[in-house]
Amino acid sequence: MEKEQLAALAKTAMQTAYAPYSGYTVGAALLCDDGTVYTGCNVENASYGATNCAERTAFFKAISEGKRKFRAIAICGGKHGVVSDEFTPCGVCRQVMREFCDDNFPIYVVSKTDISAYCLGELLPNSFGPSQIHKNT
Image 1 (tube, rainbow, N blue to C red):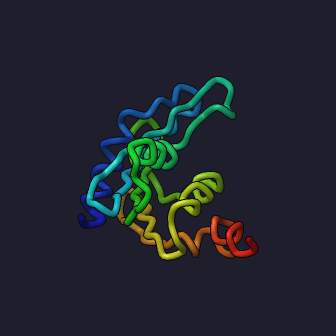
Image 2: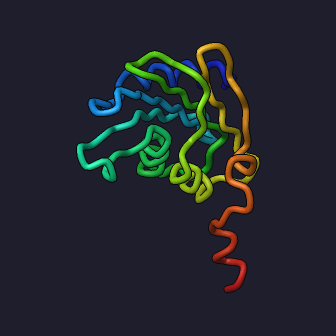
């Protein structure tokens, strides 16, 4: 699947976001190793700590269906369902990705005019993950 196709699925997922407080809607499309795609949107909560990001929603949907290997993710966001400028995943989402993905995992960040490609290692350098836990056992 091309990054443009993944970006289009993220844009569609963005439309289902629940963002009554910030008005900022986010969509994500996660490509699994077997070609399956799981989408996610952000779900806000009056208790902001209970809010879930689009990226984690997509990962948790896939993981809950037994998926453990992933090829790429596309992410987009903006006010009231309109894609705006580029932004990257929050730290919590980066750490969730690190649990299941290596440093070379592609992250496509979609803006209104472009799709930028990053890898997880760029966005989460010197990260702590499963390999550190198993390194000393």
